[in-house]
Length: 397
Image (cartoon, rainbow, N blue to C red; front, side, top):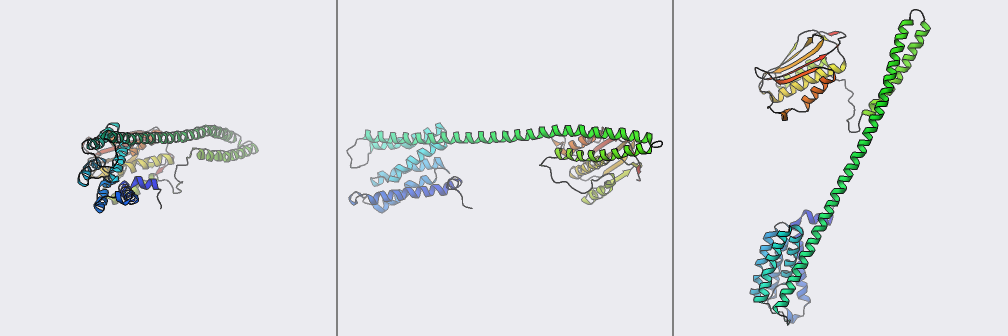
């Protein structure tokens, strides 16, 4: 995929700045070649080599700015050796001043500017180069000062603009997120309103079916026609209720939820298979069914299964070398499940309470039950839950 030039420049600063330094050298060479021959340096090849060395700090201006400043200061020895200075030296000082002003704080940028241009001004006063122009040291110092101030000012202006653009982009992003959140909140509020209305409709239909069923039972022996009419109405009402219930579920279902799983939900009958799977995973588990287990609602059955599943999973993760026991039975009209292990249990502290344990509490509270979770007095961990139920039958142990 082809990258945008700006992106490429930002992502590969060393490569981009190296090309920039090469461009400065080429610019210096063109400047020399376009100058009349009588003004060429006496040592032209060595001058081009020094031009490359003077431009080298530009390649480091973003990856190592302070070493680049130090390298640029070191190139000030070139005029003393050659009696002249490559054009790339002045351009390098300008570029580094701009770079420090753009990428650094005010104090760092000022320090870098002073470090770069003070030696230049001192050399112009103490050992000015022969330029062929009738100008004094004061003019050269003033020219360098104005050049440094211009590079610094342009760099600070660009920095301020970049900061402003970043702030505007951040505000735009936050505003977009807030707008999205408001839209989602509006959708959620509307869904809740529709759900409340559908709930009232479903509750009304169920109440009507209850009244009709009572009336049909009372007149069944003496008025079959009336009973048949009431049962027909119950049938039609039940279909309407089912349709409204489907609509209610569609309203409550969010787009982020995964597709519905058509496999049957596990229940009490699946606990034995779950215990076998945990045994195969490496945790010895003993299953004890104290009494004939009552046949309960599917929701209660699923809740008990999830409690056992979560407790055994935690034991498998945290108990270490241990033995787990699952007890299932009935206690004073309530379905009781207890999972214990002889291991070390999870590390203490509230941060260890995960989503699984929170889910246990929510499920048990939904059916008005009680849940106790914690370490056992003799060592290990214990999960105890009791859910009040109205048994409609029994399942053999």
